[in-house]
Amino acid sequence: MRRLVGITLIVISAATFGTLAIFGRYAYASGMGVTTILFLRFLISAGVMSALLVARGERIPRGPVLIALIGMGALGYVGQSLAYFSALKHASAGLVALLLYLYPAFVAILSVVVLHEGLTRIKVLALAVALTGTALTVGPAGGELPGIVLAISAAAIYSGYIIVGSRVMRQVSAIQSSTVIFASAGVVFAAMTALSGPTWPITAAGWWAIGGMVVLGTVVPVVTFLAGIERIGPTNAAMVSTLEPVVTVVLATVLLGETLQPIAIAGGMLILTGVLLLARAELRNADVSPTEITGQQEPAS
Image (cartoon, rainbow, N blue to C red; front, side, top):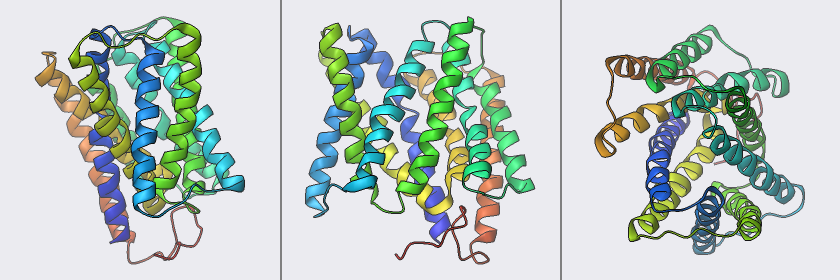
């Protein structure tokens, strides 16, 4: 049951993360710049999480855990966000999305090297199928070398963030970690916005877009993702998250009028196939292994 809950949490995370690009498009249309968007996104999200933290009677962690969480926000989230949005200036959105989804492969490699996690045949197959489906779904259209390098950098940074998160989450709750991560990223982007000058929304739709980014594009997906990797491990979480581009493509078709090509539909089916393969393998192992995917003992529930 623990693994089933973990898979469900990651699916929710992927689906809600898939809305981020849509809200981002609306925010750009309202005249906002990158640093202002990210500043509002993370600082407001930190406020929401702080309220949840108080309501639950939890406290901000201290010591090495706090330092690690600050690093995840100020370095991991800031670095990944800047690399991703900068890549969009030099390459097509499809190519950047494809290269970002190299991160499950990076996570798998880092998990084997750093966490000594086993990589079974079914996981390799699920990863290959899901990544193939991602390639078909996003429909890359080419780009310049700087865009390619930045997109790969975003994937690499994000994979490191996932590995660190899988360890830190054993010591804190998802609410505690998310509060610190959002606040740290928000402070960094606040400084960047102050230096470059803010570009506030010029329409009400822009503020609604920011609200959507905060709730559906940040708070819900990050909390469910961090809670999910605690239950099923970083590699499995990364593979299930390949559902995200499917959601993005569907929403872009419905809300932005973008054409959903047959090849994208085929790619989405492959991604779902990869996720189902993974879920089936995880559920089969639910009653076999008493330990987490990283090999460490499960924390007391």
